[in-house]
Every structure is written in structure tokens, then in C-alpha cells.
Amino acid sequence: MVIKNSSELDAASADSNYDREAEVKAFDESKTGVKGLLESGVTKIPRMFYSGELNLTKRSENNSNFTIPIVDLAGIHSNSDLHIEAVEKIGSACQEWGFFQVINHGIPNNVLDEMINGIRRFHEQDSEVRKQFYSRDKKKKVNYYSNLNLFKNNTANWRDTIGFLVAPHPTKPEDIPEVCRDIAVEYSKKIREMGHTIFELLSEALGLNPSYLNELACAEGTSVVGHYYPPCPEPELTMGASKHTDAAFMTILLQDELGGLQVLHDNQWVDVPPVHGALVINIGDLLQLITNDKFISVFHRVLASQTDPRISIASFFINYDDKAEGTSRVYGPIKELLSEENKPLYKDTSVKEFSTHYFSKAIDGDSSLQAFRL
Image (cartoon, rainbow, N blue to C red; front, top):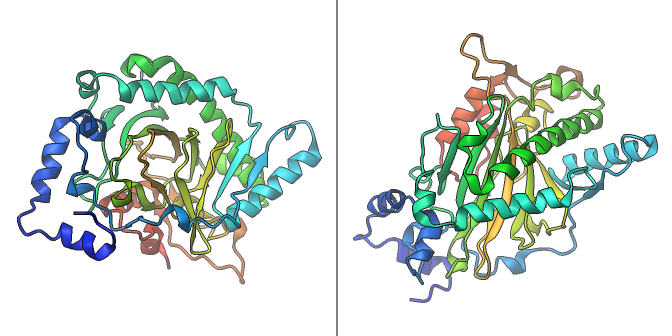
């Protein structure tokens, strides 16, 4: 059956004999992810991957009239005019797009390229080696898995992931897979430094002291995930990543040259074109909350591709506030941004409370922020 529209997709998914739970369980127990499906020789994608975001015409939806902002960080530490210009561009991008790319950020291209290669090496090594790292145990500091909420979401994404903690309790180097260990350690150090720099610029863009967001511990916790999107035999039926927002304060993304990332802007999906050496910055839900909607966390997704594997590395900046000995830090709209004309839109919450809500629900195309609005 060649599926041509959403009605046919619904009909194919409604087979009364189909046991989704069994299919998902068998897939997870294989411990080899989506890559393992390809290695087994599949030419049709399993039904668990059928997406409600039918994307037969998804690439033609992109509106080329829109362009994701690119901010040049060259000279911002030595030239005040360039610094002011960068802050203004970042502020505008955060208010209008929730996404922007940065170039000349200080992390050498060879480090970025090798990090992409390291993640590729992990996902493309023998399945028996990958299996050793496959786990959904959140207490582990290194996990290889396919689809974080596999058993909760209505549809699975065509993507595998390896993730590890960077801060506040960094993963021991010896626990990171050897094929990507050295570069993962180096990249993590540099991306942490980059994160603090971006938070300084974001603080200034809000009219606050440069240290404000860092002092709020927005960058205290960092996790890095290396996504691998294998070539898909039926890319029109599934998604690399479904429409979602990020829970964190901020995400820094490194993507390879394949493309596929799209941002929802003015109700249209807009490509985030790969720029060699650039890093993609996107505002997370928690930053929208504390800026009282001044900065926006926007929906984004990743298209599946039939040609080559896509690789991206996302670094999530969030205060995990896992200190057992004390109370969790409370976050609410920043008081310095409030006024009689700009009253708080959100109730106070902790990162733990917000994250629990975010991960407790399936990816359903709705923002987690709605539950915290006053």
C-alpha cells in the first residue's frame, strides 16, 4: 500500500490486529535502535514510527522568504560597537524567532567536526558494542537509547541518541564510549564556556547585568546528547523529531551539513540551514517563563531523510536542582522585567516541577508552559 494522504495513514494505523505495545517492546528490547532496523534490512518502516505529522509535502512548505538570524560574535570582547550590535541582534532574534545561529564564536571548526565524527563513530559501530550502553536508567550518566519517551508518545521518531551529563556532576571520562571519549570531553568543556558567554549576552539583551542569568544558575546543569538520524526508507511517513519545544533555559545545537531542522515561524515551517562552523541557539521554555514572554521558546522539528544519516549534538542548559540537602531554587518571571504594564504571566515553579510536567506528558504538539500560566 502506497500511502498518499493522512486518511490513508489513519486507516493503515487503525488495524484492529495491530499490537503497538508489543512492537514497541520488541524494538526496545533489541537494544540496537533505529540503526538496528536498517542493519536488519527493513525496507518498510514499522507502524510504530507512523507520524501524525504526515509530511509528503513537508519540504515544499518551507518559506524561503524567511531567514534564521545569524549573529557574528567576532570582536565582541574587544570592540564595544561590535558587542552592542551583537547584543541587539540577539535580543531581536530571541523576541521574534526564539532561534539564531552564531558564527566566530571561538570554538575551532576542527573541534566541531570531530565531535560530529565522534558521534557518528559511536552510532555506526557494531551493534553488539552499542548494546552495552543501551539503557533507560535515568540514574546512569551515560545512556544510549532510541526515543526518550518511547513508551509514552503516540509515535516514535526515526532517531537514536547517546547522552551524558556534563555538569554539575560530570560523567567520568572512562564511562564515555571510547570511540568518542576524547572529543566528547573537549567539546563539553568548550560548550560549557560558550553557554556562559551566551547567557551573558542574553542578560544584556534583557537590559540586565551581564552576570544576571549565570547568577540565576541557568547554566549550572548541562547535558549533551548526540542524535543520529539514520536514512529512512519511507521518510514521508515519519519524523526525525516531532514538533516540540525544549524544556531547558537554552539549547546549543551543533548540526552536520545534511539539514532537516525546521522552526515554526509565523505559522510556517522554516529551514535552519546548516552553516559550517556555526552553532544554533534556541530559547527553552524556562527562559520564556522567567523573561515573562519577552524571549520565546518556539516549536521545532526534524525531517526524516532518505539519503544520508543526519547527526546533531544538542547541549541543554538547565539547573537540575538535585541538591538533596536543600530546597529547590524557585523560578518565576524576573522582577526587574515586570511593571504595571507588564505583570507576571506565570506562577513560580522549580526546575524539578517543570521538568516532571514536561516529561510526564507525551509529545503532543502543545507547549508545557500552558500549565504554568497565571
